Image (cartoon, rainbow, N blue to C red; front, side):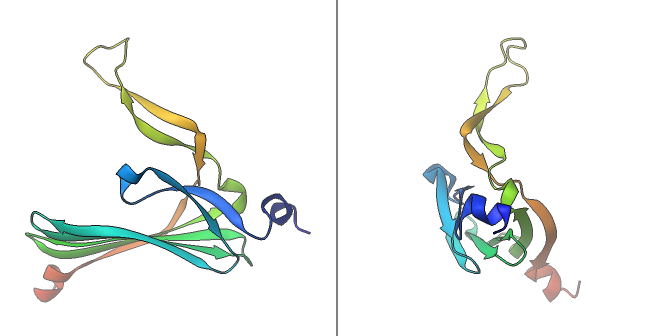
Length: 142
């Protein structure tokens, strides 16, 4: 049995930050060659927005593929952004989760210090693709 597979078992569990950030982090479990989707959105003062995250466990390649989609309409029209990332199974628990800022006692009123929660380790994603679709620009022939 492969060392990575024996370390993680047939399923993989890892933390994500929910698109609705006030919900906090979520721990998800993916089965081999299955997809998990989380999405949130709604009306905004200028239109609407939706964030969707798809996580796919590519067991043959031993990676998690994540697709992040931000879609919405504002005063400039509709814009959809896509980002695809990958993370090796061995890198699923690497990055401490950012939780906020605190004042810097060495520089009062200046730059603040980033605060991380080291009990929640997030994947170390590598961006493999990104693109966007600007519907208003398309309509104008760009």
